[in-house]
Image (cartoon, rainbow, N blue to C red; front, side, top):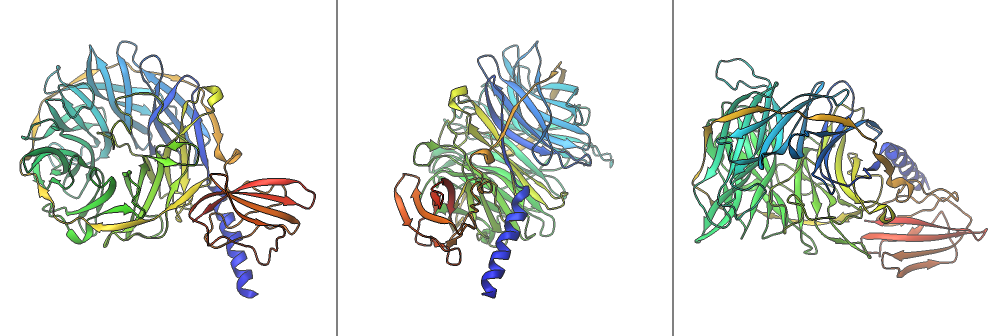
Length: 577
């Protein structure tokens, strides 16, 4: 009896601890919201700024919204230059009371990488510029921006500013068949003035000539760049994993780019471990349809074989891709992968872009704890060059979809995804904003995902990926900010696992693996159905001392219909893990 009481007390404590979790969605009635990414505001608050782009009948319009740690909107604004066109934000970063963004904007029919400095308190534009890399005839796009305070000029003084990464070339949009795609890293000061630009390129060309830089991590003595490098394997040209380092002045240090799969591989994010002086790169492999991690020695780029791996979903389901790599909330020896699953059939629809999370031990790559998939109904709504799933896996754009807030009273992860709005209102694409605790739990629906870990094994190195400094010209812009109103809702109104006590019925634990309890002794009938509506359990009575055994059910989502003695019934949602 004492053991059971302790178990129930633990359950009650767990439920209370999760009360601060939320899962909100934000809708703008004038069009679809896409390209979600986010950054924490470091101005003494625990606020977060979420960036996205509005896709409507007219040209795209960037949108920023500042949210308090409970998801409440502080301000929301659009940003547009009436003299230019097709402005898009692809990444956002914060520096004390300033927000910096990067993306692309069309100038006389040519796409240009741009950056802007924004007041974090109000969302007001302070300064903005676009850049001609090498030539004003080249198209260019910025995909990632980080803050750095390193010496960028060689005068032994710090130069606080930005490192923007992306690609430039002949084609306006991401296109592997373009005859010229070159990656770049652009260093500016805090006033957005160029300090230097390094191009990153492979001499291999072909129908997958696809060199780009989509991200960077700062180490003790330089920047390790992520993205794609063009290589050749048995006479076949294909996109490989970019593993490339430059110093703080843009000079080449080393390259360990490689080919592993059969078509398109790439690295999408990286984490620098100061203690071991290693860089962990998050990778996606097209041949395996899954994510992995490649660990390299920061000093020389040597791949650490025992710490490099990829995963497969246990039942050989496909298309689980990583986007962001963060520190664990529970153990400094672990890292956490956030990503999206391309396809998941929920019994009615095949949903895209469900958020996935995987925690692993840095030393072994072994899975730590439970891995989850957070459920939200979403199908991409219209053709767009930067759709996540316009091919098997994203061609180029892997936004910062998750961040860590280590300053909060209880450290937490924030992540963003998508949800289709009410069909009666047009079914617009909404931005889903979720916080996740150390147990990797969210407030609403999730299922358990099981993976197997595989050693990376032998790779084919690409020997001719180089970097060199190139010229860049700065140009002024005139972005305007306009306050807007976003509709705000929470999944808890219909999907929450916690708002389930209307008839004094409290379903716990949820998710559960073996026994569930209803917290109500007046229950007269219980039915459990799977997502296809098939009855998998039925009982005409219930004892709260015994609970309901669900250990024989498969992992997934179930619906419980509970009837109480008054003949009133209620439906609850159960996650079986």
